[in-house]
Image (cartoon, rainbow, N blue to C red; front, side, top):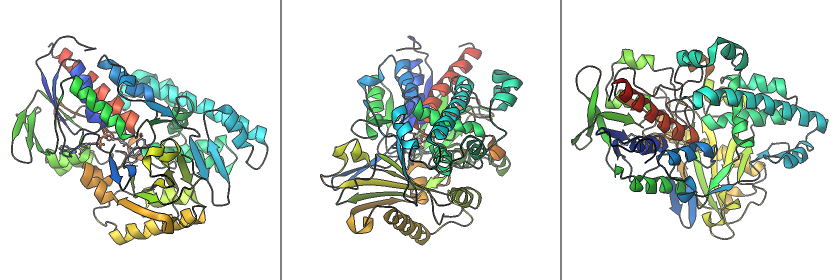
Length: 508
Ligand SMILES: Cc1cc2nc3c(=O)[nH]c(=O)nc-3n(C[C@H](O)[C@H](O)[C@H](O)COP(=O)(O)OP(=O)(O)OC[C@H]3O[C@@H](n4cnc5c(N)ncnc54)[C@H](O)[C@@H]3O)c2cc1C
């Protein structure tokens, strides 16, 4: 195995087989730890999940694969090649963007396509092209900065940032004075482009009004590193990782829920107790259950401790609607966005007021554009995902509220070109925030972990090492660098680095 040829005689229990848990397990095994994963569901992958209904293959969770280098490095840690476990296919165009006035604009990393698409906009095409180029240069600068420390070094908090970047870079290079939306407005005059680039915040389920400007690094993820589909369906990523677990002799207990993390004295954990009562001991526990629910449910931490974690508030949830239709909507690309007439209002309603939006921006996936096997011939497989607030425990939305939103979403899609969508629907599956919370133990039904919000948390997620228990680590969307598949995969690798560093500090 790469990383370490020797066995360490140290054991690790990983709670949860989401991408962060799988990545930590693989990376730690590659470092010579004895690793076992405990997963409450009957399959690995966590939110990377699928369901087959009447010939329609629905990817219930992620649909956009980005930053393949972070996945490749995981396989390399284990001395393997990613291409032996999964196959990636480039998706073109990247996104198709629909507006209520009939404007349709594609995004792609091919400059020829982008030039053609920008010609569709009102005003001077050369001016739009220059603004687009300037924006990408600025976004690339932000990406390189964030990648250099936050991603590559696995930095976890402001102090580590200051130490790594120094004040000058932090104050003058990293764009934190403006919100993401403010910096976009400075770069683009055109309202269509403003709305499109604001919605890149979708990748972390947050608001462009409340996220710092450096989150404008996100278009670079696509424009420089491509947008991909996992051949055969997104769940083939989990299948590929599953094969790697087998190759590395990592044990997985499926269908077993951890009920508590056990303490052995003050600041050390000793293992876990399963819901059935069995106790498992280990030198380390790595928790892929989200940080807040884990401290609350598995460790029963007191309110004063929980209060300090409140800044790691949940990212948005989603109304995840899967439709199988008995016709094909040829106007759709693989990834589509249907914009709100007033996107500011959408962000306000969802992220500040915590209400269900009247007119949300809607993300829609039609995977058969790349993979015809995902629907019967002559049919379409549609995933429809408006972002909505996480559950408010004091005043939760009702099922009727969610169903009313579903009707508004379908009305909007029919109005914007998907004629008779209701009438052509022959298969339907709906996940609401309570379903998402129940399925993955996510915090209030969050789909991307912790929200990126400058005022609340400066876009930091929770740290990888517990502040309270020195051999307890966290991994996944609620932990730096945060939500989304590539970030969860990177997180697990950085958790492993921290565990190894701890071992070295202890002189073992
Ligand atoms: C609808 C939707 C669309 C998305 N779209 C995209 C996208 O297009 N691109 C992208 O990159 N990302 C997307 N994401 C986000 C991405 O899926 C997540 O950020 C990522 O998969 C989360 O990984 P994780 O490591 O946080 O683990 P999770 O997926 O949250 O998994 C945690 C695992 O731990 C298990 N678990 C929890 N508690 C316990 C316990 N007590 N005992 C045992 N097991 C436990 C759960 O069952 C689960 O399997 C989407 C997510 C959703 C839901």
